Image (cartoon, rainbow, N blue to C red; front, side, top):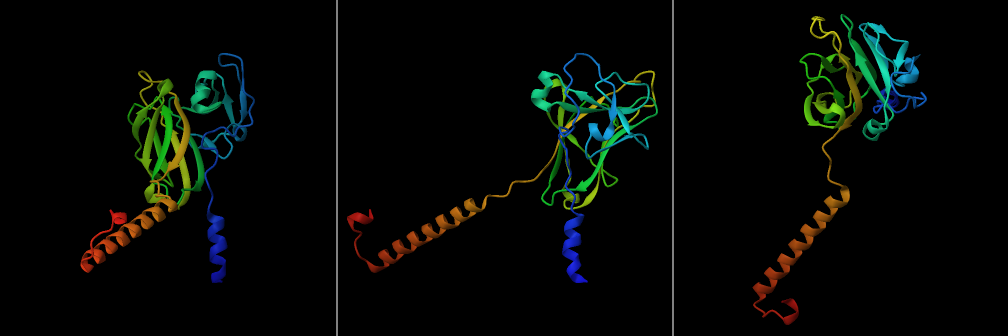
Length: 234
C-alpha cells in the first residue's frame, strides 16, 4: 500500500483561495452611502466561512449599515479605495458579546515565512486576533498605508506545508459604555517567502568563479616557467 502515499499526500494539499476577496460575483454598487442589503455568505466570501461567535453565517450584509449584533459584511469600495484594495473589502463588526470571524481551511505554502495582510482599526490590544490551526499568531505592524489601513506580518514558518484553519477574528469588547462599536477591515492577505537566488544567477556565479580560478592558474604557471609576459597578455 506504499504506492498510495504520494497520491494521498498530493490530495491533502489545499491552497488558500480568494485572499484578496475579489472573487465575489456580487455586482459593484455605484450608489453612495450604505444602500445595499443582505446576500449569501458564499457569494460575498467564496472560499471563506463567516462566523458570528460560534455560529456560521449563511447570510451577510452587503454595503449596508451595521446591525446590533456581531456580523461580517462586505463593503463595496468607492473609486479611491478600489485603487488600493479592489472592489471588495470585508469588515468584521463585533458588537457587545459577539465576536466575528472569517476562516478558511488550506495548506500553507511549503516555503512560506510570513503571513501578511492589511487591516484597520485594530490598535486596541486584544481587539483583533489571527490564528492557524488553533494556534495564535503574533502579527506586528510593518507599515501604515492609505485610508487608515496598516500592513501586518506574522511569522508563519512553523506551519509551512501544513493544512489547517486560518482564522481572523474581531473580538467583542465587554465595556460597551466606552467602546460599543468597532469595525475591523481586512484585505490583501498573502504568504511570503525569503526569495531564493535564481538558478541562472547561481550558474553565472559558478562560471565566473571557474573562469577566475583558471586565470589565476595560467598566471601561476607562466610565472613558474620564468618566461617574460607577451604584449598580448598585458
